[in-house]
Image (cartoon, rainbow, N blue to C red; front, side, top):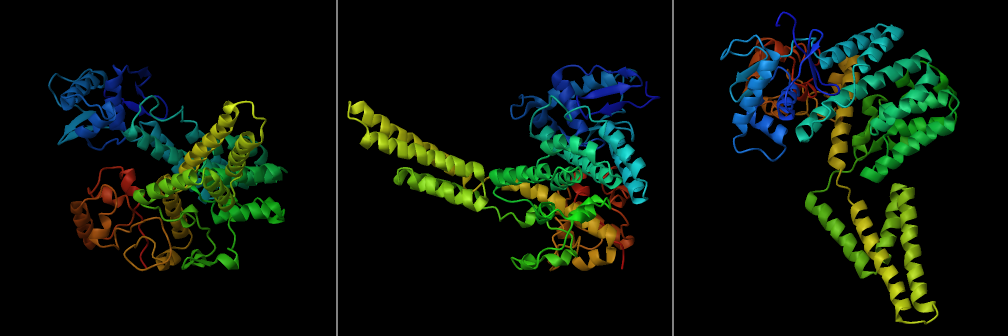
Length: 506
């Protein structure tokens, strides 16, 4: 059976095949053990993490023993010809955990990443139709939600990482299709993806541009408004400067937007003079490359501070019998340009006035009439207090800041590709230096002290010492060198790779 490698597919329901035969993986918990190992293929997954993933906070008393039993069951499925009590070739017991061996190219994730890399190389070479076709093939590998059916934070984290890869491929293909002039089919295709990835401004910009180039300016502006309202309602921030400028250019019917000279080029513009310096930062340091949401999000308040703000909002609303809360909602609606919040405030105010009028100006037909009026005021007061407490000091900033930092890292890598010398002058990859440019936390292993290296998730002090020793012997030419020299597994773990960048020498 081992002559042909076993294939593991996770971009949908978990599926394991050998040749043309799909293998039956056994009970649900046994499948969950394998799914957990496949969140980090070819890497050791601690037994405790497997237990946490499979039982999601309710582990059995003998969790490690149960995991061992399920691993034995999986080995019987994956390696039926293995001799009893012999070491496994696909599921390997390591110190403190287990590792699943995935042969390079024998998983849908490997195939997806290879196709995306090939597409980007073709795009760089100017072969746009071929690049678009490669990306179409890559996106066609997705059969649904990755690891569908498995629940819990560990699987959610894996899904998020894979979804980010998919979103990047969708954006690449959208930009290529814009360059090829395929605006009509793209305008019909992108709303589904924009709804699936509501925070991806690059994707929303491509959608707006496709709509504009098909003569649907109003729909393009509506797409911007949808994103704007979502960001304001959920996080209290507005879209990035890049998208704001695209909206302004669509509103004034800028003829340059109709030129199919590259989606990225049409979405960038020089920042207006009045905002080139804001908060002590110089946006011109990016040579016109746009800032992202991370620069527009205020620092997250500590949890205690958010609780106190919410408590104060409730107290003021109750002490003013609802009027303070309604006034606060009007103020937030104005500051955030939130139409829904303004309508809600008008609704509470109308209920409050109705209750007042009912109590004091209705015909006296009994005490129950007065009670109805006061009851309406009480309900409006309580509901407005709860609504204001939920709305003020949003608690979801951490996630959007993380996504914005990821976007900054992508942009910084684009700066490096376009102008390595300028990237070095900006201090990309060297957070230990004083600098203005925000690269989203990128780290150059050839440049930074060992202590800075330990900021990367999964990089221990021992890793950092070995990296420093290795670069003294020979500088790293790419992040993958760290795996090739045995400092990390192959391929380089995604949690590490996302923060590593190697700048070329001067």
